[in-house]
Amino acid sequence: MTVEILFSEVCNLFGDTKNVQYLKQTLPQAEFIETALTDTPYFANAAPDLIYIGGMTENTQRRVIAKLFPLKGRLQALIDAGTVILATGNAGEVFMKHISYVTERIETDGLGLVDLTVKTNLFDRFNGKVLGRFEDMDIVGFKSQFSFVYGDNEKNPFVRVQRGIGYNRKSKLEGVRINNFFCTSLLGPLLPNNPLFTEYLLKLAGADTPAAFRKEAMAAYEQRLKEFRDPTTKF
Image 1 (cartoon, rainbow, N blue to C red):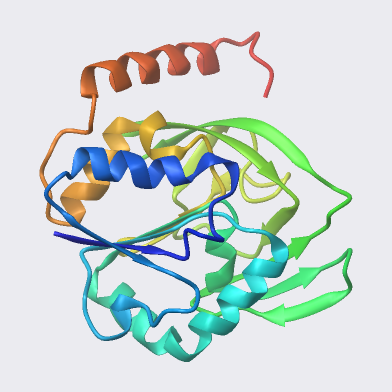
Image 2: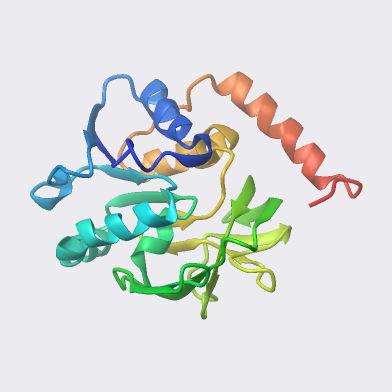
């Protein structure tokens, strides 16, 4: 199994490199290719089983868009073919149509692979928790963001939120799922906090294996579910 990690030297905010660490612990025999921002991505000429990219600064986001723009056709082909791609934090915004950086008065097009738009305001930070539902499993996570996503996401959300907010303060739809492409603003990090989803994701990629430290991860997951379901817990 081949896993490509994109630009981890700059796409590493909010501890989401722990998603990578958890994948490595779960898949000790897999080949991990760590692509730097100055490198040609492995996926440009090959088909990894899983691609991961984590959160980044706003300036880095624009650099990543510029880097990937010549490869947007290749990325679309991989999405259409069912390649597993996971983008966490604000990394998923790179794949969207347009980003308006309100504070900096900068407008930029994204890759346009997702029909949604983004507004980023560095004077409007949101921190919160999320409890939601993906297929037959509960998803828990955290948010810490300056950006909100807008547009019609009814047909392809990742999580339907039960407590907390979705992609913006008025939405109960969080993230995007198109074939096996997932993007979500959920932090935590996502994979260690949700071992059932980790197993689901890896099965899509061809690895039917238990999540690392499964007993301990499930105990922590169940405890967090209990806390998030508690009506006294603030979101």
